[in-house]
Structures are given as C-alpha cells and as structure tokens.
Amino acid sequence: MLDATQDGYTTADGRKIGGVVMEMKNITLRFGGVVAIKDISFDIREGEIRAIIGPNGAGKSSMLNVISGFYVPQEGEVLYKGKPRPQMKPYQVARQGIARTFQNIALFEGMTVLDNVMTGRLNKMKTNMFQQGLWKGAAEREEVENREVVEKVIDFLEIQNIRKTPVARLPYGLKKRVELARALAAEPSLLLLDEPMAGMNVEEKEDMSRFILDVNDEFGTTIALIEHDMGVVMDLSDRVVVMDYGKKIGDGTPDEVRSNQDVIDAYLGVAHD
Amino acid sequence: MFYREAGDFKTSYVDDNQTFPIKFDRWRYYAVLFVAFCVVPFFINDYWANAIFLPFLIYAIAAIGLNILVGYCGQVSLGTGGFMAVGAYATYKLMTSFPDVNLFFHIIIAGGITAIVGVLFGLPSLRIKGFYLAVATLAAQFFLVWLFNRVPWFYNYSASGQINAPERTLFGHAISGPASEPWAVYLFCLVFTVGSAILARNLTRGTQGRKWMAIRDMDIAAEIIGVNPLVSKLTAFAVSSFFVGIAGALFFAVYLGAVEVGEVYGINKSFLVLFMIIIGGLGSIFGSFAGAAFLVLLPVLLKNLLVGTLGWPTDLAAHLELMIVGLLIIVFLIAEPHGLAQLWRVTKEKLRLWPFPH
Image 1 (tube, rainbow over the protein chains, first blue to last red):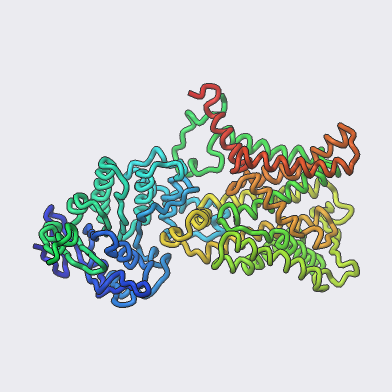
Image 2 (cartoon, each protein chain N blue to C red; image 1 turned 30 degrees about the vertical axis):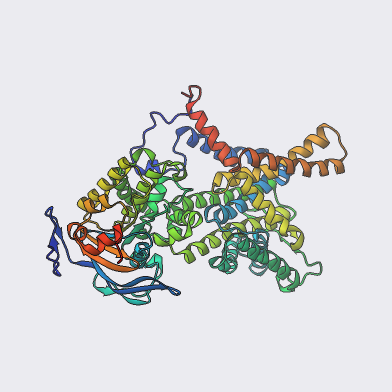
C-alpha cells in the first residue's frame, strides 16, 4: 500500500517519489451534450510514471488534453506545481515545461530528424530575429549550446545515424522515437505520452519501454502516459488511474488496480442479472 | 571523384552547421562570388545588364522573399506584385522627399515599409489557410495597385501618373536615372542579392526557420511545442515582404527607371514570382535563384535561338516562346515536382558516390 502523503512515497523498487506536480480536482469536460470526463480527481507526483488506462472511449486522450491545456474543462481545477492554472493557449502551456507526444505522430515531416528535435528547444532560445539574421555571434553560440543538449538526447535514444534524414523517410517505430526525442529535448518537468507503443511490434515495444524507464531514471522526468497494452502498463508504471465512460473507477499501484473488481468488470465485461 | 564527404570530418557543431558542409561546394561558392564581384563588372554591357543580370538578380530577391513565406512558412501569397509596388512607391517618395539621403538607405527603408504593409495584409492568415488565404492576398494585390493608381500623392501629382527615378549616385557613379552605368547598377543589385540570400539563409537555418517550418508542416503540433502561431506567421509576412519590397524598389529605381503601376506590378508579376519558386523549389534559397534564372534566362535564350539563329519573324517567335516556356514548366514539374533545387540535390547525392555507386 502506498504511503501517499504530501511528501511522496517510495516505490517497490526503491525510487523516491516527490511531491505533487500536477493535481486534477473534480474535472468535468463536456463536448456539447457528451460528457467526456466526469468529476475526476487525481494527482501526478514528481518523478513517478503515472499511467492512465481504460477501454476505448473512456476519455483517456481527453484527460491528457486537459493536462496539456489543449482542452479547458468546464468544471474543476488543474493545479500545476501547486498553483491553479489560468486558461492559456497551448504554446503557453509548453513554456511552463509540459511536453507531449501524440497518438498519431505529429512530427514535422519536411524537416530532418535533427531539426525536429531542435524544435523541442524553441522555448530555450533567447536570440531575436536580427541576431539570427547575422548568425555569427549570439545566434550561433545559442545554436551550438542547444545542439549539445539535443545531441545528448539523440545519443540517449540511439538515433544518431538518422539525424540528417528527413522525417518523412523514416519507418513508424523510429518516428515514434524521434517524437519522444523532441519532447525530451525540451527538458520538460512533466512529459505526457499518448499511446507511445500504439502499432508497434513486441521488439519495438520493449525498446520503447526501456527508453521510457531510462528517461525516468536518468533525467528524473515525471511521466504521464496512456497505453492500451496492459502488460506494458503494469510493468512500467508506479501508479495507475483507470477510467471507464469518463469516470475514474480505480487508482493505485498496478497490483491494487489489477485486483480491483470494478476494473476487472470494465475490462472483461460483467454479467448483468 | 573529388566531390567527397569522406575524410572531411567535422569536429565542432559550428563546422557541422555551415551552409556548405562539403569542401568542394564551399570553394565553388567562393568562386561564384569572385566571378560575380570581380570578373563580371569588367565585361558587362547594357544588353547583358538589362536583359539578363539585373532582372535575374532582382527577381532572385523577390523569389527569396516569397519563398520564405510560401516555401518555409507555408502561407500562400498572390500579393507579390502589390508588395513590390509598395517598395517601388516608397522608394520614389523617399527619393523625392529626401534627395540628400543615399539611395541605398532609401531602398532598405522601403523594404521596412513594405514589411509593415505585409504584416497588415498577413493578419488574415491567422484565421484562414491555403486557397482562401491566397484569395485574401489577392485582395492586397488589387487594392495596392488601385491605391497607387488613384491617389495622386503617391506619384507626386505627375500628369502621366507614372513615377520616374531621378538620378542618384553612389561613390560618384550614377546608379539610377538615364545616365546610369551598367556595371555600377549591376554591382549595386548584386550587393542586395547576396546580402538578402545570406540573411535569408541565416534566418531559415536557425530557430526562426524551424518555427516557420513547424507551422508549415503541422501548425497544431507546432503550437503545442511552444510556437506562437500569430507571431511566427506575421514575422514570415514581415521578412518576406521586406525582401519583396527591396526587389520592387530595385526594379523601379535602378532597373526600369520609370514605372506605371498597373503594367509593371500587376497580377502577372505575382504569378511570375510564384512560378519561379515552384519551379526552383519551395523551401530552398538555392531554388529561388534557380527559378529566377530559369524564368529570366529561358525567354532570352529562346529569343536568341529562334530569331537570331533560325531567323524566324519576331512576332511568331514571341508567341512560340510563350508556348515553349509553358511546356517546359509542365515538363519540369512532372519530372521533378519539388523543383530544380531537388534535381540539384539528387545530382549532388549521385555525384558523391560517382564513379563507384556501390
């Protein structure tokens, strides 16, 4: 059982999990008459891998969009680093240190891998257009500094050999990895992964799982992910939120969730009598 | 065989970021610059300047400008002619109001004024995309030409409605007006062209270029990683219009000398520059040059061939010329939809391995 105090807890494998990074309080999200999320509360703690699972149409992606600020819930409150988040545009959310990947890859197809990953650093760039037009001096220095960070990420995700390849030429699995690289390049305090293993074979899934664990381990990045593959989720995550029809039906460690009767019913179906 | 990357190791990111990473390319670039600055001016005459070099250099600037907007930022514009007119009329007003200031600065300021106008007409791009934006910029084209035709203040109430460039000198040599010297005008334009190309290259290879390309490739994802779409699109309009304005200013002040806005800066000009970047290659500075060269040189070449060599009547040649240019455009686009720049890139990739491709 977790000791979910304000100060965090220690996981089964001995990692220290810190305080609350993001807290969702009684979130309700509607699209017209459709209620996508109904009165859900949970938190994401520093350094943990938090999974959101649920059957199709449960509202997982909507939840991730609420966290990333793309959707604004009608009711409830999103607290980021203890402060209520005002309504803001998606690009402002990114500047707060939240990076994400997409279920359907959202890379910039016309650019090389390197350029794509460099876009992840956009928010760290301080030079103005005139300095960049001159190039020599501040702009070049900044480019090189950020390139060094990006190259670390590229090394880390083992995509060195394709750094100058246009993204459009890459296979699916690699694109997913490049997208993760772009998100990591931003050095986010919260990383959102929308189905990072969708459409992958077993080998690619294993690779991706390893990368996610490594990212969490080496950079201490807080990760929230949505995933369908139960085996993967149970192995990776520290805590799991289970959603069904927009409601939260379970929340806890993988073991707790696995033995939760509501969760079993949602996934395996239940005999109505 | 000498065109090789092998053995040419980069040991710093500065080296890796340079425009011409291959040694041979770099030397060729220096050679072209040397010929352009130190050889051509000694041999240039009126015909070569007016038929080939000046239009090529000026259209290259306009193409670079439009390429930033269309090729890099993905915002289609049909207002190029109108923006060139802004540059031209701004220069005219500046030349006549402040005759003591050098023309060089007038042209830069005219570019700045065009940038502001460009931002104004770029505002609709925040709401509309693609074809609809093209139509919105078409409005800019027609409105600006109408404005310069109808408001006498812009052409200093001259009876003909034309604007004429008065004579201006730079280091004692006339660069505008009837007595201008071809080599001086050529060098004047060359400086602007090379400067524009370097500036555009620097902007597009760094942060700003990535923002533009991110907006072009997927605007929603760009916004989520932190690109402000409003600012990025408007800077693209500003920078693009700046170059286009300079091109328009040069076109009037040092190339034509006298301009009637509807004829020179009409919708035809917008299409011509758009064709240049489509044929040359969207999203490529080299493509802007290639496209400008193609559409400026091809008619001249055909004319010389048909009239000069084959001895056909001029009017027949003029009509055939249009057909042949049109046909070649289609052939080129079918053969390589990504333009001459892509053709060049493929050639280079093959050259790297030549003569042992395996």
